[in-house]
Length: 89
Length: 345
Image 1 (cartoon, rainbow over the protein chains, first blue to last red):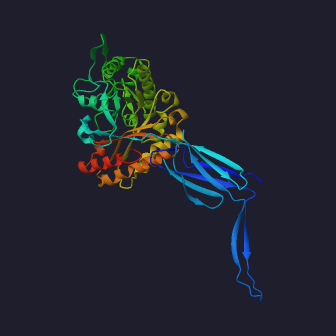
Image 2 (image 1 turned 90 degrees about the horizontal axis):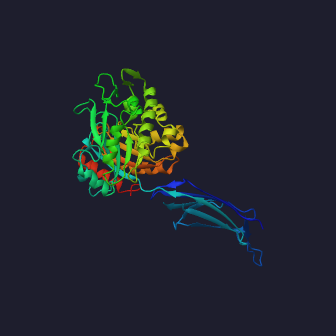
């Protein structure tokens, strides 16, 4: 099993009170793979259902964000490799 | 310094972490100036006004708190941060000759101001104590008089030397019959400002005393010339003024102009200093709805302070001249509303 990787960057180094803060998290893991499972049900007479597809993630990653000044960071987007979080300064 | 930490964990429990530090700027101080150095107490009361600009000439015998200005002491003791603009410029009232006076038992004679500034063609050129006069020690009595009064105030202030060096020098200066170009005047002013700051800094000063040098900030080359690192190392703040005088002027563009020059042209010491905008204003002739323009200022300041470069720490509205609020009630209401919002509150 490979270890995950992550980087974090803020859109500024200094914020005025009340300002919006944006945190961009870039993450990944070589083991993470998305597989598609396709299911077809066939009965005894040989009639088959239409194929149903479902995606499954192998070795999924969970991202947690903590702030030592107790700010709450809310996820505003996540495409599986880049996630953006928002907080109020 | 607050820190945000990101942890990524996979299904087998392996983790990776990354962290980013950030800082929070203190609230920007919303401030004011009322025409004629008049008592602003009524205009400021009930609003989040925490900063004030005042103008004094070193030629005048009452600088701190100023003639008939007990309200300045009241405001200062209540926590309003004072930006005291002390000018070598002689305001022209009364005698512009030499002065003899006693400060704390020491007798001083200061010669008549020997320089002219603001030499705009077709106008009467104001007199000022010359940079040569300052450097040769002829004006030490003026500084001693100001310091003696300052020590009785009861609180520290920012001393801004000169109002706008660029305005003073734009058409050259003349001292003792010799003419100096704008650039020459800037160089001489840097020497004189350095002399004055050093003169004060070696004396016992009230706690919280800070220094800056005044510029309008409208000329990039002059701004650079007047902000060498050697002088900035002796100053606590950068300073410039901000005016909207065209219908297309936005708050963001006007507040950022001189900041952008600073970031591009000045050294690391200068850029480590926060900024006092001693004057900002909206000219009603071109921008009739002053209130609407003022309402856009908090967001502009917040955005600029989120960018790289020096932090805007105080912005004092100049209710006089170009900034005159008309109608006053609507303008003041807009100021109060702006200063009640982030990044001012």
